[in-house]
Image (cartoon, rainbow, N blue to C red; front, top):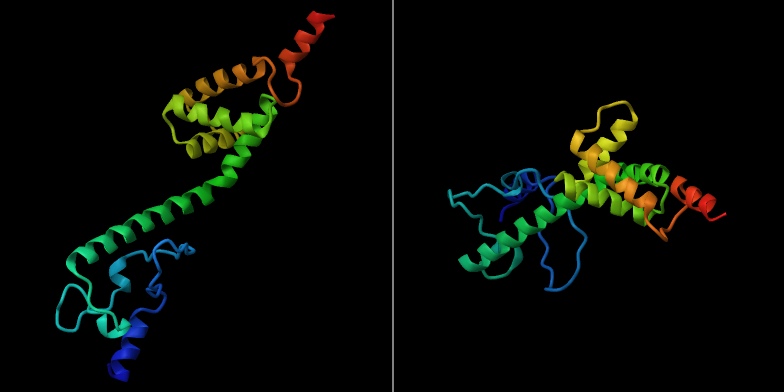
Amino acid sequence: MSAATGSARTSALAGCPRPRTVPPGEATAPAAPPAHRAECEPAAADGDAEPDRSADSGDAPLSAREREELTARIDALETEVGQLREALASRPVIDQARGMVMALAPCDAEAAWQVLVRVSQHSNVKLRSVAAALVSGAEGAAVPKPVRKHLATALREVRTAPGRRGRSGPSDRRELRAQR
């Protein structure tokens, strides 16, 4: 490879993650996936669809099956990284919603989480969307009717659950008065 070819290739790949051989079973920190895989692939000089990396790595070229498996693994990892990024981005909103449920029920963090999960499942809305609706509802926006309905039901059940964990709520106070 000439110096001119190497520098042109380096500038074309600037900002793209470098491939690394990882032994099977070794955990790695996820790298940011490129927005478009084609942007991070060097252009093939002779018009080939797949660049030949055998000169770069010193390894034998991959077979079609190995390339297919590697592509499937890369796609799966890119999907997983995307899901993890979404989870990290939605976590603060979910934590705010959990705090709101803890104040409304009143209950502990685990019970609040279960309320959000239940509302999500029963209203067929993603948990992060339920949390966002609850937080925006506290700011004056309308909470969608299915979410509002299932949230009210779940909160009522948490408040009236016998032997529930958490702080004393209105239903517990009534029970205490009745026992006196």
